[in-house]
Amino acid sequence: MRRAHINIYNSRKHLAVTLLLVVLPFLFLLGFSRYAHIAAGQLFSDVGMSFVRLVVAYLISVVLAWILAILFYKGRRAKVALPVFDVLQSFPAFAMLPLATLVFGRSNTTVIFFLVITIIWPILFSILSSLKLIKHEWEEAVEISGMGGVDYLKYFLWPVSVPGLITGSIIGLGEGWEALVATEIIVRMHGGLGDFFNRYSTNAEITALGIAGLLILIFSMNKLFWLPLLESSHRRMEE
Image 1 (cartoon, rainbow, N blue to C red):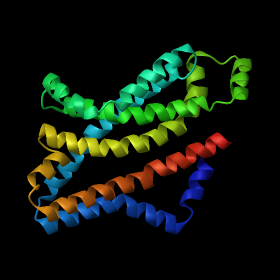
Image 2: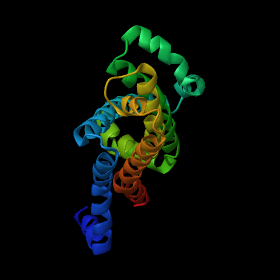
Image 3: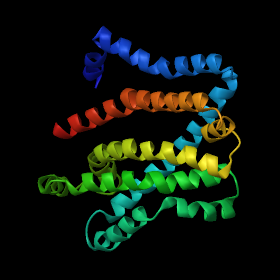
């Protein structure tokens, strides 16, 4: 692990690009706030509130998806559960939004609930795909070693499922950002990116710059965090 870390940052060019990806969204937001005469504090607050809602929903989705994948990736339970999951992921999520609003009101709970039912399916099916690629030789080795219980989950199923989890996270969060903004607009949440786009819906220039800022944020996060994680997980599986 230490050796891989050194190899990654041994290149000054790579380190410079990494630092640029870290500061680029912040620089853009600062420049945007000055150009559009919007208080920087308000702009960062909107981004931060949406980001927190997305992170909470993502963590809930990861936990639920991994548990469901572990329980239903093989055997008779898989034959029953997988068609049900397939139907549920095909169900139009926005059809649930009025019901969620009725139950939870115009609240963070509504937004997070809707995000969970949007994000969970790509993660779940990606983890299931990884688990289905488990080689028979690996399972035999685990049986011979007598590994079971928590150790089986921690040292066998978890490492095998990580590539699928990361791939599903990239896809799920991509859909999650879209669902997040749309839900905040529809529910009319106070604070957040949806509130920002609502406030400036009649200003095409600010709206376009806001979309550009969101794309820069997503791009930076993927390049800085998710893609290196994906590459690292696949490299570990090959080893």
